[in-house]
Amino acid sequence: MRPAREYDIRFGHNILGKSSKNWGRYLVISTPSAWSIVKSKIVRSPVGLGMNNWLDRSHLIEVSDSLTNDADMVVGIGGGRALDHAKLVASRKDLPLIQVPTIVSTGAIIHGFVADWKGRVIVGRLAEVDCEYVLVDYDIIKQAPLHLNTAGLGDVLCGYSGISEWNYFADMGMSDPVDTSLTKPLLDHYEKISYDFPLTLENDHSLSDKSISYIMKEVQDRDDRMLRDPRAPAADHSFCFALEAANDKYWVHGEACALGAVIVAWHTDQSPETLVKWLDRCMVKFRPKDMKISKKELSRSLEELVTWMQRGDSKTNGNPSIMVSNPVTGDRFEECWSWLSTI
Image (cartoon, rainbow, N blue to C red; front, top):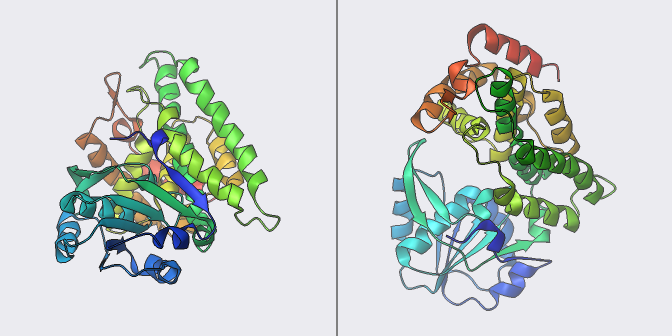
């Protein structure tokens, strides 16, 4: 698969309308909300339209197989679920793919793989497809609620979670000393994001064209900057999946990952206030009350997180993530909920 840094991402005003003039027979995969926003901006109508409801493999395949094979290409329009579904359709029909995100916070824009979901559990990879190019239409992106776009920075800043765990295990003498040549550049970059991004906003704190490009670039560059080290487990992303699995519903990915990272930083006592400051500066929602996560839902998710991480590789130098070895349950959860309610 093509690395994220090599994706051809094209920005502009009415770039969708201009590009769609040249499309021949094409299929669209979208969601009802995204399609209602975009359809009037497309010059030529598609020969087939499939709507995504969720990511279970049977649903993805059923929708794909219901669409005509007499098409020249596939266009994904929407957030992460629609874009992933479009990859599956392009793969099954062996057609080129163009992606048109309606928000810039999702890693699905710059990743070619489609996870194989059996219900709420990932059991493998279903497809791998590199799109021809990505169209980021400023006018479309600005129609989405602001937090659905700033969540992309939450999906970057949540890398603080792994650093927190490494620091914790090193302090406890249960891991190698932290390699600051790996962690300091990341921490410095996170701090820089928290100062630079607010400067891109309009006077009324809405997104400017520069804001949209900034978020998209940070999401695209995340893979190259990411700390991939077994001593720094990614409990932040595991938390997002556990949250959705335990409660059988979706949340905004970057916001859920940010919340997971905040909880890890608190649980390891690794300056959670620093991460909170960064997220607030970048206007990322992460507080349960703002995400409409109830106390019961959060408790269930942190219990599920133990099982979720045990399915994969959650080890750090022979030690499991603290979210597995010392889970935030029982009295510790009560402390966590109380703290989250005060920030």
